[in-house]
Image (cartoon, rainbow, N blue to C red; front, side, top):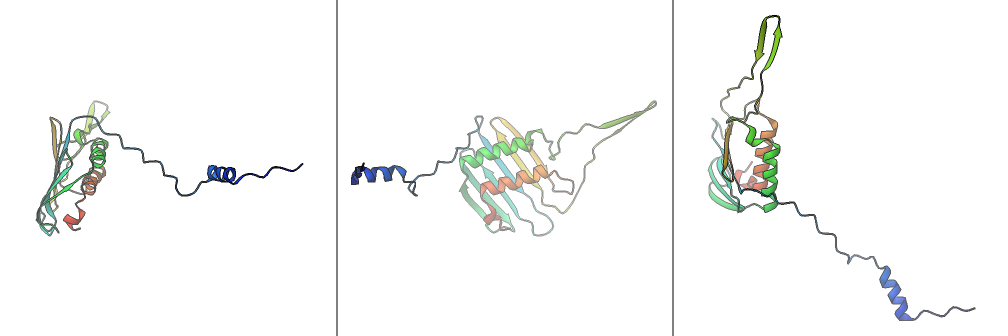
Length: 183
């Protein structure tokens, strides 16, 4: 028994149904969830050292504005303005929490309980000491989250917390000011 021939319209319909060419659109990226809460503002100010350290002030506002004031040893001296994407501002807000920014003292240290040992009738406790250093470029970091304001100074001594160093790096990176700093 002979099969009937497929008509041209039916053949094209079958081929079109199998087409997997390049006209398919990729799925849109998942949106970064917005942090619900009070507005965030960040101020980062780098101070001078005895050499040629960059000296500047950076402010990130809750509406995405970035204000820059380059003072010494920077590629962009004077005032500049930019913008930060809402997703980057939300990411900074989460990174502040990850670095435990609001738990730190005025010098960027996390609270540490003394370690105590009792031997017989004698109790000995050890306390965390601070390192004093000179010829570093200190950072003054001020964060306002709604009515809550916390400020700390990081002198960038040899005992600094890597989480705090990474937080400063992420603030500068997300604000997009590397070209203004010039380093």
